[in-house]
Amino acid sequence: MIDLDMTLLIIFLICLFVTLFIGVMAGFSDVRSMTIPNAYSVYVILSFFIAFAALYLGGQDAIFASITSHLLSGVFMFVASAVLFALGIIGAGDSKFATACAFWVGVKYVPVFLLFMTIFGGLLGVVALVIKRKKPFKNPLEGSWVYQVQGGADKVPYGVAITFGMVVAFVYSGYFSSGVMHSFMSLS
Image (tube, rainbow, N blue to C red; front, top):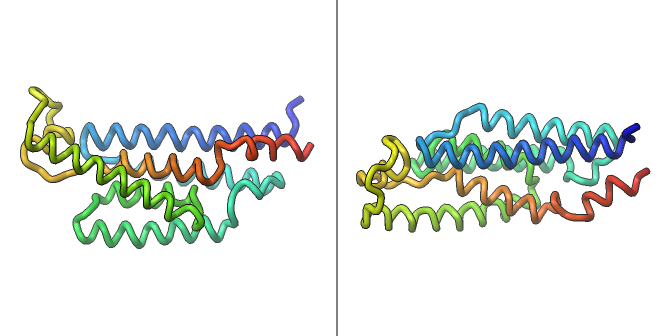
């Protein structure tokens, strides 16, 4: 029979890896069509709240920060990304997806999330400049990022940068650490 700690570990890992998978899908979607479906943001938020609720109710509330911390990080990211959207710096899908991912990282790791998201976004910007200038692709998919950039647009698939920042923030948060895995085993 599977004990409670093992069940909680499985729920946590499923939610975590669903979020990572959705992040990868968001990045591919953004590169392919410069859009991130709203459903991806909803899945990331749902995964967080399922994991948080399960761990909290199961007595494993030390894995995450307080719910206040996670809610504040989501609110902060919503406000910050809404301003960037209003200024035309990022798209609406980017704003929603960054907000959804921020729920996972909590206030303590929002700076890590933002730093690595910005660094990778900058690298994508440099790649965009090279693609725009060199036009290295003969027949890029119509509507794709490469197609648009080679056509003269100044765009970056920020869903890729958001996912990269999220993954780094997850590492800093300790979600992949042996300590997190050990905490599930030590309560038995």
